[in-house]
Amino acid sequence: MKKVPGSTVTRLSVYLRLLEELPSQGVSTIASEELATRAGTTAAQVRKDLSFFGTFGKRGLGYGVVPLSSALRSILGLERKWRVALVGAGQLGRALLGHAEFWRQGFAIEAVFDTDPRKIGQRCYGVRVRPAVELEDGLGRGYDIAIVAVPAAAAQEVADRLVAAGIRAILNFAPVKLQLPEGVALKSVNMAVELESLSFALANARVAALADAEGKRLDEVLASIAVAAPPQAKAAE
Amino acid sequence: MKKVPGSTVTRLSVYLRLLEELPSQGVSTIASEELATRAGTTAAQVRKDLSFFGTFGKRGLGYGVVPLSSALRSILGLERKWRVALVGAGQLGRALLGHAEFWRQGFAIEAVFDTDPRKIGQRCYGVRVRPAVELEDGLGRGYDIAIVAVPAAAAQEVADRLVAAGIRAILNFAPVKLQLPEGVALKSVNMAVELESLSFALANARVAALADAEGKRLDEVLASIAVAAPPQAKAAE
DNA sequence: TAATGTGAACAAATTCACAGCC
DNA sequence: GGCTGTGAATTTGTTCACATTA
Image (cartoon, rainbow over all chains, first blue to last red; front, top):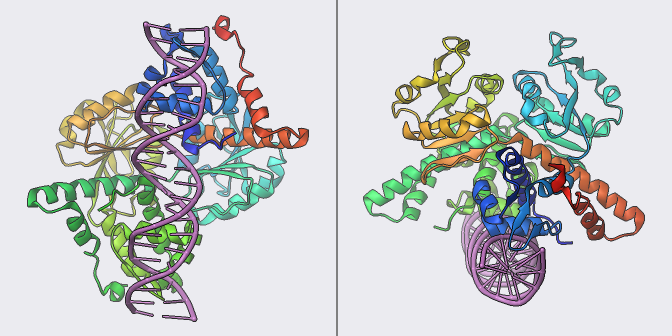
Protein backbone atom coordinates (compact mmCIF):
# COMPACT_ATOMS: atom_id res chain seq x y z
CA MET A 1 0.00 0.00 0.00
CA LYS A 2 1.17 3.51 -0.78
CA LYS A 3 1.66 5.71 2.23
CA VAL A 4 -1.41 7.82 2.93
CA PRO A 5 -0.80 11.58 3.02
CA GLY A 6 -1.80 13.31 6.22
CA SER A 7 -3.86 15.71 4.18
CA THR A 8 -5.90 12.79 2.90
CA VAL A 9 -6.75 11.71 6.45
CA THR A 10 -7.82 15.26 7.29
CA ARG A 11 -10.07 15.33 4.25
CA LEU A 12 -11.63 11.98 5.13
CA SER A 13 -12.78 13.57 8.39
CA VAL A 14 -14.34 16.38 6.45
CA TYR A 15 -16.07 14.01 4.05
CA LEU A 16 -17.47 12.02 6.94
CA ARG A 17 -18.85 15.12 8.63
CA LEU A 18 -20.56 16.14 5.39
CA LEU A 19 -21.91 12.66 4.70
CA GLU A 20 -23.49 12.47 8.11
CA GLU A 21 -25.71 15.44 7.33
CA LEU A 22 -27.14 13.85 4.21
CA PRO A 23 -29.43 11.02 5.36
CA SER A 24 -31.62 13.47 7.28
CA GLN A 25 -31.99 15.41 4.04
CA GLY A 26 -33.13 12.31 2.24
CA VAL A 27 -29.95 12.01 0.18
CA SER A 28 -28.83 8.40 -0.10
CA THR A 29 -26.29 8.60 -2.89
CA ILE A 30 -23.65 11.18 -3.73
CA ALA A 31 -21.16 11.68 -6.56
CA SER A 32 -17.53 12.61 -5.98
CA GLU A 33 -18.23 15.92 -7.74
CA GLU A 34 -20.93 16.91 -5.28
CA LEU A 35 -18.98 15.76 -2.24
CA ALA A 36 -15.96 17.68 -3.51
CA THR A 37 -17.91 20.90 -3.90
CA ARG A 38 -19.18 20.67 -0.34
CA ALA A 39 -15.74 19.83 1.00
CA GLY A 40 -13.99 22.55 -0.95
CA THR A 41 -11.85 20.24 -3.04
CA THR A 42 -12.00 18.48 -6.43
CA ALA A 43 -13.77 15.35 -7.57
CA ALA A 44 -10.47 13.72 -8.53
CA GLN A 45 -9.12 14.43 -5.07
CA VAL A 46 -12.11 12.77 -3.42
CA ARG A 47 -11.76 9.67 -5.56
CA LYS A 48 -8.00 9.48 -5.01
CA ASP A 49 -8.39 9.90 -1.27
CA LEU A 50 -10.86 7.05 -1.09
CA SER A 51 -8.86 4.87 -3.45
CA PHE A 52 -6.08 4.58 -0.87
CA PHE A 53 -8.41 2.42 1.17
CA GLY A 54 -10.47 0.47 -1.32
CA THR A 55 -13.32 0.94 -3.73
CA PHE A 56 -16.55 2.26 -2.33
CA GLY A 57 -18.50 3.67 -5.26
CA LYS A 58 -20.69 2.38 -8.05
CA ARG A 59 -19.66 3.54 -11.51
CA GLY A 60 -22.29 5.66 -13.16
CA LEU A 61 -23.98 6.21 -9.81
CA GLY A 62 -21.72 7.54 -7.11
CA TYR A 63 -21.33 6.52 -3.50
CA GLY A 64 -23.94 5.19 -1.15
CA VAL A 65 -24.04 7.69 1.68
CA VAL A 66 -24.53 5.19 4.47
CA PRO A 67 -22.02 2.56 3.35
CA LEU A 68 -19.41 5.22 2.67
CA SER A 69 -19.97 6.77 6.09
CA SER A 70 -19.48 3.39 7.68
CA ALA A 71 -16.34 2.78 5.70
CA LEU A 72 -14.90 6.15 6.70
CA ARG A 73 -15.69 5.57 10.35
CA SER A 74 -13.93 2.26 10.09
CA ILE A 75 -10.90 3.74 8.36
CA LEU A 76 -10.65 6.56 10.87
CA GLY A 77 -10.91 4.18 13.78
CA LEU A 78 -14.15 5.65 15.03
CA GLU A 79 -15.94 2.39 15.58
CA ARG A 80 -14.48 1.93 18.98
CA LYS A 81 -14.69 4.47 21.78
CA TRP A 82 -11.44 6.19 22.64
CA ARG A 83 -10.87 7.14 26.25
CA VAL A 84 -9.47 10.64 26.50
CA ALA A 85 -7.71 12.35 29.39
CA LEU A 86 -7.62 16.11 29.69
CA VAL A 87 -4.72 17.81 31.44
CA GLY A 88 -5.42 21.41 32.35
CA ALA A 89 -8.83 22.53 33.59
CA GLY A 90 -8.34 26.20 32.82
CA GLN A 91 -10.56 28.28 30.57
CA LEU A 92 -9.59 26.40 27.48
CA GLY A 93 -9.68 22.96 29.06
CA ARG A 94 -13.16 23.53 30.43
CA ALA A 95 -14.34 24.90 27.10
CA LEU A 96 -13.16 21.71 25.39
CA LEU A 97 -14.77 19.56 28.04
CA GLY A 98 -18.09 21.29 27.52
CA HIS A 99 -17.98 21.28 23.76
CA ALA A 100 -20.26 18.34 23.11
CA GLU A 101 -19.60 18.49 19.37
CA PHE A 102 -16.15 17.00 19.73
CA TRP A 103 -17.37 13.92 21.49
CA ARG A 104 -20.14 12.86 19.21
CA GLN A 105 -17.83 10.45 17.39
CA GLY A 106 -16.79 8.24 20.24
CA PHE A 107 -14.28 10.32 22.11
CA ALA A 108 -15.00 10.50 25.81
CA ILE A 109 -13.09 12.63 28.29
CA GLU A 110 -13.15 10.49 31.37
CA ALA A 111 -10.34 12.02 33.39
CA VAL A 112 -9.35 15.61 34.09
CA PHE A 113 -6.20 16.74 35.86
CA ASP A 114 -4.98 20.09 37.12
CA THR A 115 -2.43 21.44 39.58
CA ASP A 116 -4.51 24.33 40.89
CA PRO A 117 -5.76 23.41 44.42
CA ARG A 118 -8.86 25.56 43.86
CA LYS A 119 -9.88 23.47 40.88
CA ILE A 120 -9.08 20.06 42.32
CA GLY A 121 -12.15 18.26 43.54
CA GLN A 122 -14.53 20.44 41.54
CA ARG A 123 -16.76 18.80 38.98
CA CYS A 124 -16.70 19.94 35.38
CA TYR A 125 -19.47 18.55 33.24
CA GLY A 126 -19.71 15.55 35.47
CA VAL A 127 -16.01 14.81 35.64
CA ARG A 128 -14.10 15.38 38.86
CA VAL A 129 -10.87 17.35 38.54
CA ARG A 130 -8.01 15.37 40.03
CA PRO A 131 -4.62 16.57 41.20
CA ALA A 132 -1.92 16.28 38.58
CA VAL A 133 0.23 14.18 40.92
CA GLU A 134 -2.28 11.37 40.39
CA LEU A 135 -1.74 11.50 36.67
CA GLU A 136 0.28 8.32 36.31
CA ASP A 137 -1.92 6.28 38.65
CA GLY A 138 -5.12 7.75 37.30
CA LEU A 139 -4.44 6.79 33.72
CA GLY A 140 -3.21 3.29 34.43
CA ARG A 141 -2.86 2.28 30.79
CA GLY A 142 -6.57 2.61 30.21
CA TYR A 143 -6.30 5.74 28.10
CA ASP A 144 -5.10 6.24 24.55
CA ILE A 145 -5.45 9.96 23.89
CA ALA A 146 -4.58 12.96 26.02
CA ILE A 147 -5.42 16.60 25.49
CA VAL A 148 -2.78 18.98 26.77
CA ALA A 149 -4.29 22.33 27.69
CA VAL A 150 -1.70 23.66 30.12
CA PRO A 151 0.59 26.71 29.93
CA ALA A 152 3.50 26.47 27.51
CA ALA A 153 6.06 26.16 30.30
CA ALA A 154 4.43 23.03 31.71
CA ALA A 155 3.54 21.28 28.46
CA GLN A 156 6.71 19.27 27.81
CA GLU A 157 6.82 17.85 31.33
CA VAL A 158 3.16 16.92 31.14
CA ALA A 159 3.73 15.26 27.78
CA ASP A 160 6.64 13.22 29.14
CA ARG A 161 4.53 12.01 32.03
CA LEU A 162 1.63 11.16 29.73
CA VAL A 163 3.88 9.09 27.50
CA ALA A 164 5.29 7.33 30.54
CA ALA A 165 1.72 6.58 31.59
CA GLY A 166 1.03 4.80 28.31
CA ILE A 167 -0.69 7.52 26.29
CA ARG A 168 -0.14 6.98 22.56
CA ALA A 169 -1.67 10.10 21.06
CA ILE A 170 -1.59 13.73 22.17
CA LEU A 171 -3.63 16.71 21.07
CA ASN A 172 -1.58 19.70 22.14
CA PHE A 173 -2.97 23.19 22.65
CA ALA A 174 0.14 24.67 24.26
CA PRO A 175 2.19 26.86 21.94
CA VAL A 176 5.33 24.73 22.09
CA LYS A 177 6.80 22.04 19.89
CA LEU A 178 6.50 18.89 21.96
CA GLN A 179 9.34 16.41 21.78
CA LEU A 180 7.86 12.91 21.76
CA PRO A 181 9.27 9.41 21.20
CA GLU A 182 8.56 7.47 18.02
CA GLY A 183 5.19 5.84 18.02
CA VAL A 184 3.33 8.54 19.90
CA ALA A 185 1.02 10.45 17.56
CA LEU A 186 0.87 14.21 17.92
CA LYS A 187 -1.48 16.86 16.63
CA SER A 188 -1.16 20.47 17.63
CA VAL A 189 -3.60 23.31 17.61
CA ASN A 190 -1.75 26.58 17.81
CA MET A 191 -4.04 29.54 17.56
CA ALA A 192 -1.23 32.06 17.68
CA VAL A 193 0.27 30.51 14.57
CA GLU A 194 -3.07 30.60 12.76
CA LEU A 195 -3.57 34.25 13.64
CA GLU A 196 -0.07 35.07 12.45
CA SER A 197 -0.78 33.38 9.13
CA LEU A 198 -3.78 35.65 8.76
CA SER A 199 -1.64 38.62 9.67
CA PHE A 200 0.81 37.57 6.96
CA ALA A 201 -1.99 37.28 4.42
CA LEU A 202 -3.33 40.72 5.31
CA ALA A 203 0.10 42.34 5.30
CA ASN A 204 0.81 40.80 1.91
CA ALA A 205 -2.51 41.86 0.46
CA ARG A 206 -1.57 45.40 1.42
CA VAL A 207 1.83 44.95 -0.16
CA ALA A 208 0.32 43.53 -3.31
CA ALA A 209 -2.06 46.48 -3.55
CA LEU A 210 0.82 48.86 -2.93
CA ALA A 211 2.94 47.28 -5.63
CA ASP A 212 -0.02 47.48 -7.97
CA ALA A 213 -0.55 51.16 -7.24
CA GLU A 214 3.11 52.02 -7.65
CA GLY A 215 3.63 49.88 -10.70
CA LYS A 216 6.43 47.98 -9.02
CA ARG A 217 6.91 44.24 -9.12
CA LEU A 218 5.68 42.46 -6.03
CA ASP A 219 9.04 40.92 -5.24
CA GLU A 220 10.76 44.30 -5.08
CA VAL A 221 8.26 45.67 -2.63
CA LEU A 222 8.34 42.54 -0.52
CA ALA A 223 12.11 42.49 -0.49
CA SER A 224 12.20 46.07 0.73
CA ILE A 225 9.82 45.14 3.53
CA ALA A 226 11.80 42.09 4.52
CA VAL A 227 14.83 44.31 4.88
CA ALA A 228 12.89 47.01 6.71
CA ALA A 229 13.95 45.50 10.05
CA PRO A 230 16.45 47.72 11.90
CA PRO A 231 19.85 46.73 10.47
CA GLN A 232 21.77 47.27 13.73
CA ALA A 233 18.92 46.15 15.95
CA LYS A 234 21.23 44.35 18.33
CA ALA A 235 21.45 47.53 20.40
CA ALA A 236 17.68 47.57 20.70
CA GLU A 237 17.62 44.68 23.13
CA MET B 1 9.42 36.26 -6.25
CA LYS B 2 8.42 32.60 -5.99
CA LYS B 3 5.14 31.95 -4.29
CA VAL B 4 5.58 31.26 -0.60
CA PRO B 5 4.15 27.94 0.62
CA GLY B 6 1.63 28.22 3.40
CA SER B 7 3.66 25.76 5.41
CA THR B 8 6.58 28.16 5.26
CA VAL B 9 4.49 30.91 6.82
CA THR B 10 3.41 28.56 9.58
CA ARG B 11 7.01 27.66 10.29
CA LEU B 12 8.07 31.32 10.39
CA SER B 13 5.63 31.76 13.27
CA VAL B 14 7.22 28.86 15.04
CA TYR B 15 10.72 30.20 14.47
CA LEU B 16 9.70 33.58 15.82
CA ARG B 17 8.21 32.07 18.96
CA LEU B 18 11.43 30.14 19.56
CA LEU B 19 13.68 33.12 18.83
CA GLU B 20 11.84 35.26 21.33
CA GLU B 21 12.81 32.92 24.17
CA LEU B 22 16.50 33.17 23.41
CA PRO B 23 17.60 36.68 24.45
CA SER B 24 16.55 36.04 28.06
CA GLN B 25 18.80 32.98 27.98
CA GLY B 26 21.72 35.07 26.84
CA VAL B 27 21.75 33.59 23.35
CA SER B 28 22.38 36.24 20.74
CA THR B 29 23.20 34.14 17.69
CA ILE B 30 21.78 30.88 16.37
CA ALA B 31 22.59 28.52 13.52
CA SER B 32 19.95 27.09 11.20
CA GLU B 33 20.79 23.65 12.56
CA GLU B 34 19.96 24.63 16.14
CA LEU B 35 16.81 26.52 15.19
CA ALA B 36 15.69 23.55 13.14
CA THR B 37 16.14 21.13 16.01
CA ARG B 38 14.05 23.30 18.28
CA ALA B 39 11.39 23.77 15.63
CA GLY B 40 11.26 20.11 14.68
CA THR B 41 12.46 20.55 11.13
CA THR B 42 15.72 20.51 9.15
CA ALA B 43 18.45 23.10 8.76
CA ALA B 44 17.91 23.23 5.00
CA GLN B 45 14.23 23.88 5.55
CA VAL B 46 14.94 26.79 7.86
CA ARG B 47 17.33 28.37 5.39
CA LYS B 48 14.96 27.83 2.47
CA ASP B 49 12.05 29.30 4.40
CA LEU B 50 14.01 32.43 5.21
CA SER B 51 15.44 32.70 1.71
CA PHE B 52 11.98 33.45 0.33
CA PHE B 53 12.17 36.81 2.03
CA GLY B 54 15.79 37.84 1.88
CA THR B 55 19.11 37.01 3.47
CA PHE B 56 19.32 37.34 7.20
CA GLY B 57 22.30 35.27 8.29
CA LYS B 58 26.06 35.59 8.40
CA ARG B 59 27.97 32.74 6.76
CA GLY B 60 30.09 30.84 9.20
CA LEU B 61 28.19 32.37 12.08
CA GLY B 62 24.45 31.93 11.92
CA TYR B 63 21.62 34.37 12.53
CA GLY B 64 21.51 37.28 14.94
CA VAL B 65 18.60 36.47 17.21
CA VAL B 66 17.30 40.01 17.57
CA PRO B 67 17.61 41.11 13.93
CA LEU B 68 16.03 37.87 12.74
CA SER B 69 13.16 38.28 15.19
CA SER B 70 12.56 41.77 13.90
CA ALA B 71 12.64 40.60 10.32
CA LEU B 72 10.14 37.82 11.03
CA ARG B 73 7.80 40.18 12.83
CA SER B 74 7.97 42.44 9.82
CA ILE B 75 7.35 39.63 7.36
CA LEU B 76 4.42 38.32 9.37
CA GLY B 77 2.88 41.75 9.61
CA LEU B 78 3.18 41.88 13.37
CA GLU B 79 4.56 45.39 13.58
CA ARG B 80 1.15 46.91 13.46
CA LYS B 81 -1.71 46.11 15.79
CA TRP B 82 -4.59 44.19 14.25
CA ARG B 83 -8.05 44.87 15.56
CA VAL B 84 -9.93 41.64 16.09
CA ALA B 85 -13.64 41.03 16.52
CA LEU B 86 -14.96 37.93 18.23
CA VAL B 87 -18.34 36.52 17.30
CA GLY B 88 -19.69 34.06 19.83
CA ALA B 89 -19.19 34.55 23.55
CA GLY B 90 -19.83 30.95 24.52
CA GLN B 91 -17.40 28.74 26.40
CA LEU B 92 -14.90 28.67 23.61
CA GLY B 93 -15.20 32.36 22.72
CA ARG B 94 -14.65 33.41 26.31
CA ALA B 95 -11.71 31.03 26.63
CA LEU B 96 -10.09 32.65 23.61
CA LEU B 97 -10.80 36.10 24.95
CA GLY B 98 -9.13 35.26 28.22
CA HIS B 99 -6.15 33.53 26.74
CA ALA B 100 -3.65 36.35 27.05
CA GLU B 101 -0.97 34.37 25.22
CA PHE B 102 -2.63 34.86 21.86
CA TRP B 103 -2.61 38.60 22.09
CA ARG B 104 1.00 39.21 22.99
CA GLN B 105 1.88 39.82 19.37
CA GLY B 106 -0.35 42.73 18.58
CA PHE B 107 -3.76 41.16 18.19
CA ALA B 108 -6.44 42.87 20.25
CA ILE B 109 -10.02 41.68 20.58
CA GLU B 110 -11.90 44.92 20.84
CA ALA B 111 -15.41 43.81 20.00
CA VAL B 112 -17.47 40.81 21.06
CA PHE B 113 -20.86 39.83 19.68
CA ASP B 114 -23.41 37.23 20.66
CA THR B 115 -27.09 36.51 20.12
CA ASP B 116 -27.84 35.19 23.60
CA PRO B 117 -29.78 37.89 25.53
CA ARG B 118 -28.30 36.64 28.80
CA LYS B 119 -24.79 37.32 27.57
CA ILE B 120 -25.45 40.67 25.92
CA GLY B 121 -24.35 43.57 28.08
CA GLN B 122 -22.08 41.41 30.23
CA ARG B 123 -18.40 42.23 30.33
CA CYS B 124 -15.83 39.61 29.43
CA TYR B 125 -12.27 40.53 30.26
CA GLY B 126 -13.12 44.17 29.94
CA VAL B 127 -15.00 43.93 26.69
CA ARG B 128 -18.76 44.40 26.62
CA VAL B 129 -20.73 41.74 24.76
CA ARG B 130 -22.90 43.36 22.11
CA PRO B 131 -25.95 41.99 20.32
CA ALA B 132 -25.17 40.34 17.02
CA VAL B 133 -27.61 42.63 15.22
CA GLU B 134 -25.11 45.43 15.79
CA LEU B 135 -22.42 43.48 14.02
CA GLU B 136 -22.32 45.51 10.83
CA ASP B 137 -22.52 48.88 12.58
CA GLY B 138 -20.16 47.86 15.33
CA LEU B 139 -17.36 46.88 13.01
CA GLY B 140 -17.63 49.88 10.72
CA ARG B 141 -14.59 49.00 8.61
CA GLY B 142 -12.28 49.41 11.57
CA TYR B 143 -11.57 45.71 11.95
CA ASP B 144 -9.45 43.36 9.86
CA ILE B 145 -9.74 39.99 11.55
CA ALA B 146 -12.73 38.17 12.98
CA ILE B 147 -12.85 35.05 15.08
CA VAL B 148 -15.90 32.91 14.48
CA ALA B 149 -16.77 30.86 17.56
CA VAL B 150 -20.45 30.13 16.97
CA PRO B 151 -22.30 26.85 16.40
CA ALA B 152 -21.82 25.20 13.03
CA ALA B 153 -25.31 26.06 11.85
CA ALA B 154 -24.76 29.80 12.30
CA ALA B 155 -21.21 30.04 11.01
CA GLN B 156 -21.80 30.65 7.30
CA GLU B 157 -24.31 33.42 7.89
CA VAL B 158 -21.99 35.09 10.39
CA ALA B 159 -19.14 34.83 7.91
CA ASP B 160 -21.20 36.44 5.16
CA ARG B 161 -22.11 39.34 7.41
CA LEU B 162 -18.51 39.76 8.52
CA VAL B 163 -17.32 39.93 4.94
CA ALA B 164 -20.05 42.46 4.14
CA ALA B 165 -18.82 44.49 7.10
CA GLY B 166 -15.34 44.70 5.63
CA ILE B 167 -13.54 41.91 7.48
CA ARG B 168 -10.68 40.55 5.39
CA ALA B 169 -9.49 37.62 7.48
CA ILE B 170 -11.39 35.00 9.45
CA LEU B 171 -10.25 32.48 12.02
CA ASN B 172 -12.99 29.88 12.09
CA PHE B 173 -13.61 27.48 14.96
CA ALA B 174 -16.93 26.15 13.71
CA PRO B 175 -16.72 22.68 12.15
CA VAL B 176 -17.91 23.75 8.71
CA LYS B 177 -16.18 24.66 5.46
CA LEU B 178 -16.86 28.38 5.09
CA GLN B 179 -17.52 29.68 1.61
CA LEU B 180 -15.79 33.04 1.24
CA PRO B 181 -15.16 35.39 -1.67
CA GLU B 182 -11.69 35.82 -3.17
CA GLY B 183 -9.50 38.11 -1.16
CA VAL B 184 -10.74 37.12 2.28
CA ALA B 185 -8.17 35.04 4.12
CA LEU B 186 -9.39 32.03 6.07
CA LYS B 187 -7.84 29.78 8.66
CA SER B 188 -9.77 27.07 10.38
CA VAL B 189 -9.25 25.26 13.62
CA ASN B 190 -11.25 22.07 13.70
CA MET B 191 -10.59 20.05 16.78
CA ALA B 192 -12.81 17.17 15.73
CA VAL B 193 -10.69 16.70 12.63
CA GLU B 194 -7.50 16.73 14.67
CA LEU B 195 -8.88 14.14 17.06
CA GLU B 196 -9.96 11.96 14.19
CA SER B 197 -6.46 12.11 12.72
CA LEU B 198 -5.18 10.83 16.04
CA SER B 199 -7.79 8.12 16.00
CA PHE B 200 -6.62 7.14 12.52
CA ALA B 201 -3.01 7.01 13.68
CA LEU B 202 -3.92 4.83 16.65
CA ALA B 203 -6.12 2.52 14.62
CA ASN B 204 -3.35 2.12 12.06
CA ALA B 205 -0.72 1.47 14.68
CA ARG B 206 -2.92 -1.39 15.85
CA VAL B 207 -3.30 -2.63 12.31
CA ALA B 208 0.42 -2.41 11.68
CA ALA B 209 1.08 -4.41 14.83
CA LEU B 210 -1.54 -6.96 13.80
CA ALA B 211 -0.03 -7.35 10.35
CA ASP B 212 3.33 -7.79 11.95
CA ALA B 213 2.06 -10.47 14.30
CA GLU B 214 0.25 -12.37 11.56
CA GLY B 215 3.02 -12.01 9.04
CA LYS B 216 0.68 -10.38 6.55
CA ARG B 217 1.44 -7.35 4.44
CA LEU B 218 0.03 -4.13 5.84
CA ASP B 219 -1.98 -3.37 2.72
CA GLU B 220 -3.84 -6.68 2.91
CA VAL B 221 -4.87 -6.07 6.50
CA LEU B 222 -5.86 -2.49 5.82
CA ALA B 223 -7.82 -3.48 2.76
CA SER B 224 -9.77 -6.03 4.77
CA ILE B 225 -10.61 -3.32 7.28
CA ALA B 226 -11.65 -0.84 4.65
CA VAL B 227 -14.04 -3.43 3.30
CA ALA B 228 -15.31 -4.35 6.76
CA ALA B 229 -18.20 -1.91 6.30
CA PRO B 230 -21.54 -3.69 5.81
CA PRO B 231 -21.70 -4.47 2.08
CA GLN B 232 -25.48 -4.07 1.79
CA ALA B 233 -25.71 -1.36 4.42
CA LYS B 234 -28.34 0.59 2.53
CA ALA B 235 -31.01 -1.25 4.50
CA ALA B 236 -29.41 -0.03 7.72
CA GLU B 237 -30.54 3.53 7.16
C1' DT C 1 -24.47 6.74 -20.01
C1' DA C 2 -22.77 8.73 -16.12
C1' DA C 3 -19.45 8.47 -12.79
C1' DT C 4 -15.81 5.61 -10.71
C1' DG C 5 -10.88 4.11 -10.17
C1' DT C 6 -6.26 4.78 -11.56
C1' DG C 7 -1.81 5.22 -14.10
C1' DA C 8 0.54 8.93 -16.06
C1' DA C 9 1.55 13.94 -16.20
C1' DC C 10 2.12 17.72 -13.56
C1' DA C 11 2.95 20.81 -9.65
C1' DA C 12 4.51 21.76 -5.13
C1' DA C 13 7.41 21.09 -1.32
C1' DT C 14 11.44 19.22 0.70
C1' DT C 15 16.10 17.71 0.78
C1' DC C 16 20.65 17.54 -1.15
C1' DA C 17 24.95 19.24 -2.09
C1' DC C 18 28.06 22.59 -2.80
C1' DA C 19 29.73 27.25 -4.13
C1' DG C 20 30.41 31.46 -1.73
C1' DC C 21 31.33 34.30 2.08
C1' DC C 22 32.32 35.77 6.88
C1' DG D 1 36.44 26.30 9.12
C1' DG D 2 31.87 26.80 9.58
C1' DC D 3 27.59 28.00 8.12
C1' DT D 4 24.67 30.40 4.86
C1' DG D 5 22.09 30.75 0.43
C1' DT D 6 20.47 28.40 -3.50
C1' DG D 7 20.00 25.76 -7.90
C1' DA D 8 19.29 21.00 -8.90
C1' DA D 9 17.56 16.46 -7.60
C1' DT D 10 14.16 14.14 -5.28
C1' DT D 11 10.09 13.20 -3.05
C1' DT D 12 5.41 14.07 -2.12
C1' DG D 13 0.89 15.48 -3.35
C1' DT D 14 -2.60 16.94 -6.87
C1' DT D 15 -4.76 16.99 -11.27
C1' DC D 16 -5.69 15.03 -15.71
C1' DA D 17 -7.64 11.98 -18.79
C1' DC D 18 -9.53 7.88 -19.98
C1' DA D 19 -10.56 2.92 -19.81
C1' DT D 20 -13.91 0.55 -17.17
C1' DT D 21 -18.09 -0.84 -15.40
C1' DA D 22 -22.70 -0.84 -12.93
